[in-house]
Image (cartoon, rainbow, N blue to C red):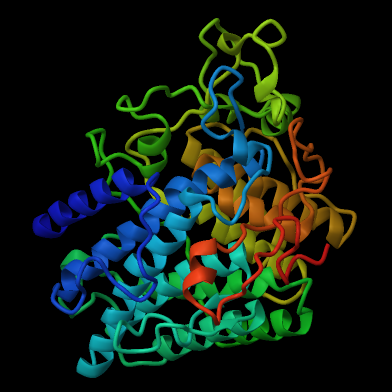
Length: 477
């Protein structure tokens, strides 16, 4: 394990150093030479690649677009994100897209290929779950992606066809089901990955729960766009006795040492950067917490330099310091040793609560909702008291409560990207405010444009990037 952790440190350093570069990698080329690296090192490196991207640059995007944070009016790092001014040639997100294909996804595929051949089905399940999680992030952000013909290397298909979102989702479900159907150890992993499993330490019961919870999330995401598919899939899971996460699926290896810190902290708050003042409290989440006397407010934001707690409007980065003193505004509280969460305990309970509220899953929706709220308060070290009782009044009121509390809970685990996607899917919370400096004519962003480097290199990729205001297929509200 120590060897794996040292290797992880090197990979983390590489990820953070290259996060702002414009040197793109070929989608079918793996810079880590997976043909030579041992599987037991490929897996933790792949997990770190996923975590470094989803928990780093995409977490900054999600934190701003889910209105947890706003760009400070005394600095300028994220003005483009806060004003929805994202274009296909944006090097930052193009680089992250390429990192996931060239790093994480390729390494997971190598593990899947080798473990299928050797019959190491525990390793196969672990790699399949993490690869499916990563693919879902990409298709939820970009829409059509390469999946079936991707990752074949220089000797394979270097121009993979892109598939539409529903087909990608169906493929992910089929892959997870196949992995779950294999003969793997029921408790501790037996392959060489057992000592290098940086997510669950080789606990196969937790991997099965993670797989089931990821499936539940994939089905729930389709609830409005393909309700019959969503309902049938969820009902089949419950009929088969599927068990879901009751703890976090996370990468918890970070420490307050350069290049070993949480990736969001490393990219935004590290002392090695010019400033750590970019991400300030957004009035949207801050106001909700303040209105409800929610003690989680002080767990999400730091006291302002001038004392007290205060937020700023979304997109208020062009306000003059006379209009808004930046020293009076609270900064995002991001811990250097915080984990990167893939699916948190609270999120799992909220997914189950929605399934139960819709009548597609068994269990008590109110109890599951309360378990999610309680898990969020516990994770942030705050006392809930009598806040946020489960509402009556029918399904819509219950869904609003479930998703709104999921939105708050995801702030505590730096999962702004997931919160943003859920807001697009459901319309909750319904009190988001359009950026003061928005460039999309009043329309909120719905996606990221496919990086132009992908279209230029692959004639089978979409040649005209969709507008960022064009909804992803499951966003029908």
